[in-house]
Image (cartoon, rainbow, N blue to C red; front, side, top):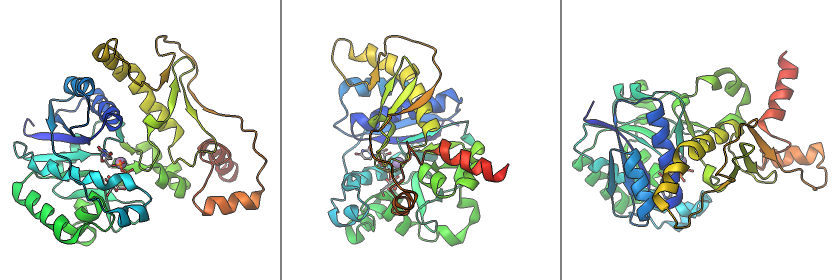
Length: 331
Ligand code: UDP
Ligand code: GLC
Ligand code: MN
């Protein structure tokens, strides 16, 4: 077990918060494996110190960047070139097998059984299921593989500008070769999938083991009211985060991570995202949807927006509303 590890990556303090919550969630579910965080040079000292307390190993790595503006803009994510840095995980050769997890993932139960899988095991990408999503994958560190991956990056680049494109080109027979390398979807459940197939989520969602906050909006982009234990959402926000999981993330962040950050930062100012974080109250947990003064949208307009991928996830089209509607059909 000592030669197996969960690995994540944070190149800045925002993703470092994600890594802290992920690490805490792995510990809370009593993983028997080591925890490794790869960090970039821009992660500040106090954040590194907090990571060091949660992770067994915090390793500073060089930033690798695809700087592939064309492909990244197709994906509307100019920020993801730096995800090439993820490839450093293959250099962790003091481990025989690892599970990489994006810093925007959260475990809901013990997932140590993932180490029974072989390289390269991953779950289908919700957008293109013949590709795997590189937010959660099982791999074997190897300098040889690392070199081959870097070579592929320099020679052919990445079709999405990030690591997922390169990895799918490299492990190109993933979709057809070996079904045991297809992780069940519950090991990488993203909200985008929830909202595109709600009945499946209703049927299988309770089995979810790993939530992935895939997309532009991340849990740490919101703020949290510690008094009411509610995440402050914006109803116009076209985010794809599921309110229950978002609340889970904030619960761990405010309860287990923030106290460590406060201790580490001392009198130095930092952005916690938490309001009234000094006080612990036991209110009812809920997502607050700001009562928006906007004009009512007709049913047809709403349908059009939904089809254009602009669902009002935190408001009218919130999961709760949809579930209520589904229940009225199913019951
Ligand atoms: N990442 C990072 N810094 C960045 C962008 C990404 O450290 O500026 C790391 C982080 O571990 C993150 C992963 O790369 O979870 C993949 O990026 P992201 O999760 O934002 O992509 P998505 O899953 O939304 O496509
Ligand atoms: C994806 C994955 C993420 C990866 C990014 C860039 O959407 O979720 O892990 O870093 O694409 O390729
Ligand atoms: Mn991610």
